[in-house]
Amino acid sequence: MFKFHIKLSMKKKLKKVNAAILIIGNEILSGRTQDKNIAFISNWLNMECGISVEEARVIQDNRKIIIKNILSLSKKFNYVFTTGGIGPTHDDITGESISKAFKVKYEFHKEAYKILLNYYGKKKFNDGRKKMAKMPKGSSLIYNPASAAPGFKIKNIFCLPGVPSILVSMIVNCKKFLNKGSKTFSKSINFYTVESKIAKDLGNIQKRYLRSVEIGSYPFFRLGRVGVSIVIRSKNISKLNICEKLIKKMAKGKKINIYSNYNENL
Image (tube, rainbow, N blue to C red; front, side, top):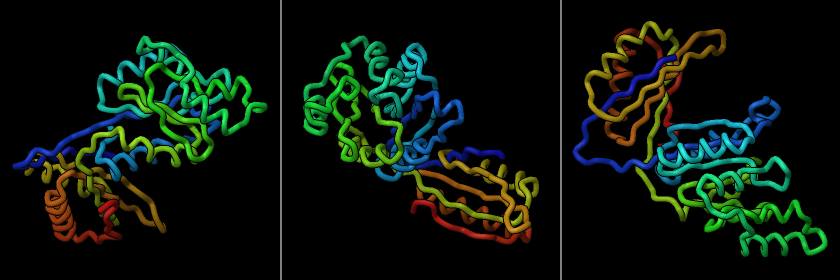
């Protein structure tokens, strides 16, 4: 697999907003649980907010490691989305670790406490469930319509649960905190050929432009045949279309058949 970053000249500078995803959980690293959140968050941020995810990390349930990653990512990106570690058990340490990272108190959030008390009732509101109302001082709540326990936002950090179905129900409540960027458009073209046959030509296409189109080449094996999926991505739809035409022209000249051609998010 190889990638080209094609830069295209534009008269108007597009607004760029970026993000990182931090997956926290020993169960992901051990292979016991398969992560589904990176793909969902990345797609949602691009489609709904025009925010590009530029980095994703998977780390242990370890205070020092969480603190180190929170501090580095929060400085590097406009937004950081974490998943996991905000539940009721002893190894749910994300909130406490972020409090230490930003040197603020880890305390009960009054509104979160009230939400959970009303949800569980006084008799069933045990210490584990009370823990889910604790978060860094100054946090804003990310409401949870699925199971009540809220996530939280502090500075540019958004803390969400690791359970995909709950995360999906909550993420829309992050939108009010986000500054929108320019959407990234994407198209895919599939050829029945091998990468080596088109590598040089894709490289030559790159030399004709100056700014911000990404071309990815991904081999596949389907129905007994070898092929290549070319994915082109850009925040400029007109430049994206130009690249698509050039790639198709290149394929026609080499007598390469197109298997399928579709827009991923146009």
